[in-house]
Length: 137
Length: 137
DNA sequence: CTGTATCCAGGAGGATACTG
DNA sequence: CAGTATCCTCCTGGATACAG
Image 1 (cartoon, chains in turn orange, brown, red, blue):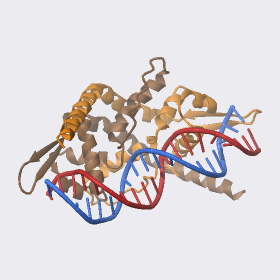
Image 2: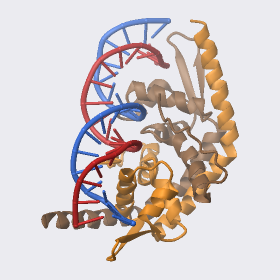
Image 3: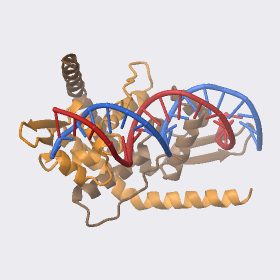
Image 4: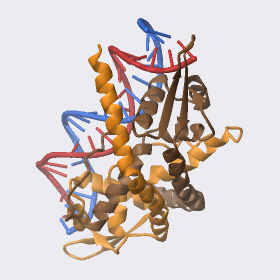
């Protein structure tokens, strides 16, 4: 269906880096995919309806919005509430777990901001070197 | 080529959640892909050679090892040193930036460990409900 | 040893018509 | 409104032969 990295390595004899990578990967798998973070962030301020999300997240397709919401719900990161009205109304809200995730993500965000320029420079120089080398062929 | 999420949204009028998601995504894009974290972790203890990595990371193909190494190098997360010997010897080592990333990742790892069981339970119950619902068709 | 080039399969994700 | 079903495309990643 989606995000198929459930092959958890259970070998306790594996090198430490192995087991650690495995744990980080578990976390990353919940928030991987093109839209999960955007959705989570939009839900962090309170309950939001389906169509509101669709409008709040430019470029997302109805299909991916549904799929990502379902997966986040399955992992217990969001809750879905259906109001039996006409027309139907469905609200999504982040769980406590999602809030904690959001907090843990702060460190990563800070890292990205801190090194944004350095990374951009690194890429530029790398690409220039590649281009220069290619010219010699 | 690989990891094509360079479409940074530059609209300063975008909602805050939008810009924040963008920043986190930047970070995630450096470490996305199936092997980046595993490689980074293996390099966190000191310089490692190509073949050592290949053996240390079970299941990785030569192609993906090379591709991932190149991308990490391009982003300035690892450094590549070639020794002009016969046979050739190449060493990879993580940069200071990678160390900081590793530190930032700790929070995420902790989150994953803290909620591993809750997530597993959530998935199980979700899947059971789905199966039950499907039985009604 | 350290890659590169090529071919191939599977799945993530896009577009969109249809439905309760 | 809030999805679901369907079709299609492209990219990630696997396998592996070849090369400096």
